[in-house]
Length: 275
Image (tube, rainbow, N blue to C red; front, top):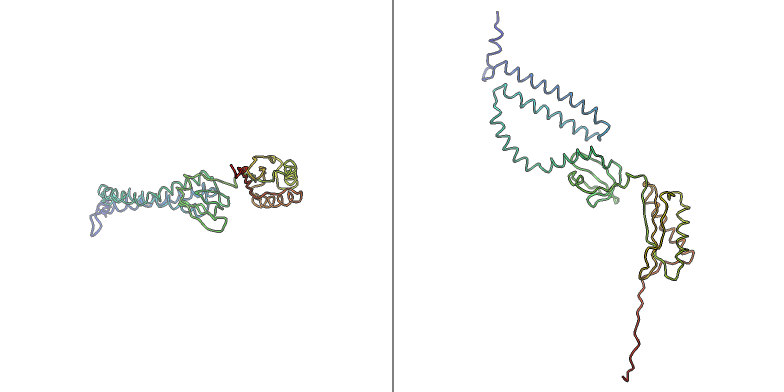
């Protein structure tokens, strides 16, 4: 009768590894792969509606291969590989890689926080790091913005996360304003009435919050009227440009002009040449 114990305790030819140790090594790896697959499915189920497709795939791979790597390290002692020397070598390598990859890790962690906090989403108009435009992609490492003049800008997530993010699309309405200068000889009250009427007649200017139109400053060359109006965020820019031109036209029709800068030169009385 074959002695199974002697078979399992015998070594693999050409090595010092026992067959049973190799079996234990393989079992640990198989269990690790199974756990990794279950974790990947679980992560996909939880995050599929919260992360963009490419980002979700990256997160799945991170957990999947991370679990397999841990299982491999745990299984190494079964085949006689000491973790002491491996950890020492890994520690030195980790120090070198740590300095080289600290920026990548910072961007990765910042990306995870951004995806969780969601201060912006794809399609939002934002301003960040001095760049204004539309969010085209939010990845784990970086965020891509298309500026209003069509330039794609990639910003590392660490900078995005630590910066002040202006989200112009988050609120459904947005305010815009002008400073309209008129001559001192013109009727400021009449100018305010004309601007109010233009605002009231426009279908996209909101009644609440109500428009604010008032004399703000008596400047050197003009009486400055401040105009503050609210419009839907989606149509904000077009309405702003449209009303600016309409205000100019209607004021000119009423004989109210926007003055040029003026300088008044006063010359004192000349002294008598005989004195």
